[in-house]
Structure formats: structure tokens, C-alpha cells
Length: 196
Image 1 (tube, helix red, strand yellow):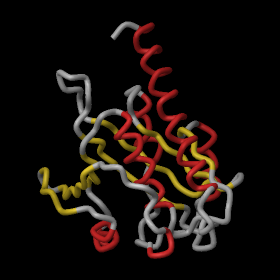
Image 2 (spheres, helix red, strand yellow):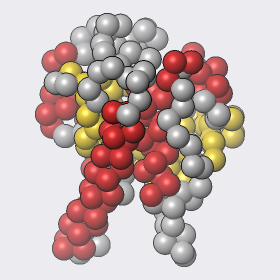
Image 3 (cartoon, one colour):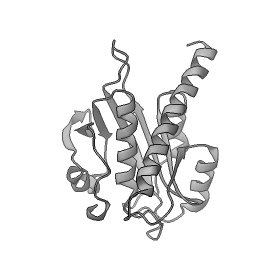
Image 4 (spheres, rainbow, N blue to C red):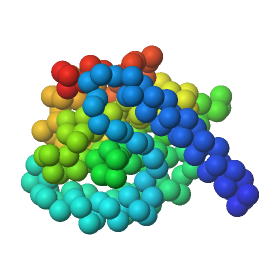
């Protein structure tokens, strides 16, 4: 792809993501159950630095978290990718990386695949238990804006399977050793935050 076309694509998809972020932020502002500020933005160098500096606690699953520099770099190279940072004020609460499938002849993309979701490991962060449903909702809205029909979770953390199934996902299969879950993208509104 020529440089000017690549930049144009970057700008076009950045506008689409910003529109999705703005609409979700507005929906959240209208919910009584979310009492803290939420700001959605693309992952940038600042978000990665904040993560390195502040996410020092061990993740509840026992891991030390993911290598976000390695996860986000391929998404930055794909204009239609979703590199999502979820903030509450100046606190980074979550990171998400997703990418759409290749275009069909119609120009639409059939699937948005979420590769990784991670929340601040501090159990006291202001969006505790809301990062995953919020990440999925933003991903679904973005996928819908691209014409996607399915939202796919690639290799989810096994301990979170019951929660994903509760959110309407089904086990769709395996790609080699990697499990993936899917649900259809519809006209979903924000799920009831209280029961998540």
C-alpha cells in the first residue's frame, strides 16, 4: 500500500474508532451504575509507559501480565486494528488489542477478533470488574461499524470462560491449540453492569 494511502487509511479508521469511543463514553455517562469517569483512547506510547510504571502487582491469574509492546505493535501496523486504552481519570484501567478479518468483496469484514484484554491488576482500581464487559462492548461497537458479523475471543484465560459464556459467547472451536469463542454482533446495548 503506498504511504499516502496507508496514512489515509490510518486517519479514516482513527476517526471511526474515535466516533465509537465518543458514543460509548456518552452511553456510560447516562448510566447510573458507573460512578467514575471513563475515557477511551487508542493505546499510545504514554499508555504503555503508564502500564509499565503502575501495573506492578501480580495478575490474579498468577501471571505477570502480557508484553503489550509486542501485542500492540502489529495492530499499529494495521490501520483497521483496535488498540484500546481504557482510562478512569489519569488511571489506566485496561488495555485491549483486536483486529478485523480481511475484507470481503463487499468491503465488509466478517469478524473482529479480540486477542487480549488486560485490566489493572490492582484490585482497588476504579473500574474493577467493568474492564472486560466494557472492552467487549467497545469491540462489538467497533466491529459493527466495520460491518463485522461476529466478535471472536482468541485464547481466553480459562478462568474467565464462565464469565464469557454469561456474556453470550459460545465455544466456536480451536485453531491448533488455541481455543476461541464467538458471539454474533447485534444491536446490543450495554449489558447490565450490576450482574457482571
